[in-house]
Image 1 (cartoon, rainbow, N blue to C red):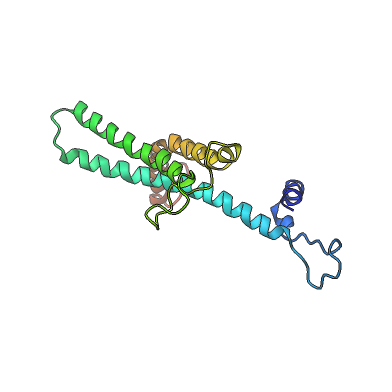
Image 2: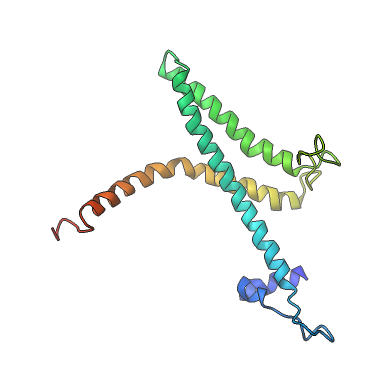
Length: 179
């Protein structure tokens, strides 16, 4: 059923796929049978989880970076170069753990039951790097890396825009020609 729903959604969009009924195919159906709604729900949840996990990894990396910036000042290094080296090592380590190791540990199947009985690591659905792994986990990793490439630079782009907005607001939203 998923193949039909996927092709139908490509042609007509997800909104019309939700309301698609198969009454003419099901004999004696008293209610409208909406078989593609479950497929649409699964697709939306899957995409939401991919985007959500990428955003969460980025937010955690940004929070860790801010925390490390404060921590480095308390370490009282003798030179700026030593501070920069320490900060770089900490950022690199936490981003590697957060992006690579956690995603791999959650999605790979090394164990048949939960780690320590309750921790859901090493019992994912992928025992090896398969096409399905690249389709699902690889997509998440790629999106996370792309977001992490651009997210540190956003503050440098947004800060001047915020200053311009507040200056404009302070002048009652009028430019210098209308003053």
